[in-house]
Image 1: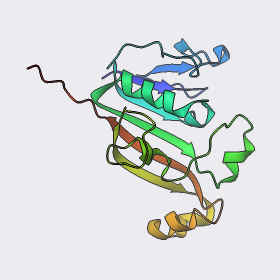
Image 2: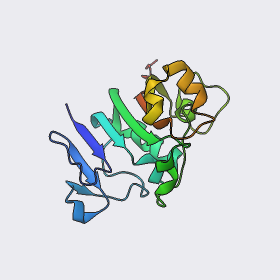
Image 3: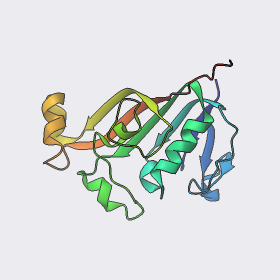
Length: 170
C-alpha cells in the first residue's frame, strides 16, 4: 500500500512518503503544493493524508484535481481542515481558505449545483470534531450550532474516494 503524507511539517509518518515545502522539516520530498502538476504519476497512491494543509493552498480546486489524479480509483483521501468558526482558523495568518462542514460537498459526485471541476469524488465520511464545551453537545445539534457559535467545532474531517469511470472500448 503506497501512502502519501501531504504537508507533513514535523509530523513525519512511518510507512508514508512525507512531503513538505520546508527543507528544515526534512521531508522525503520537498515540494510546494501550489506548483502543478505534483511530482507523482497518475494513480500512484492508495492513501493520501492531507491534515492541516488544504487551507494553505492557493487554489483548492487545482489541488483537489491533483489529488484525484494521483490517487488510485480504489484509493482514499483523508482531509482535515480547521472549522471556519474556530479561533485556530483565523489565528494562523498563513491560512488562505476557510471551511464549513459542507465545503467539500461540491467535489462529491451527486452535487449538481457546482461545476467547478469534472474530477469528482465519493464522500465516504464527513465528521466535525468538537472542542471545549462542544464535546458534550450531541453531534446533530453541534453541526447546526457550529454555523453560529465559534470554538464548539475545531476541525472538519472528510474521507473521499476519486470516481474514475473506466472507458469501455467499442
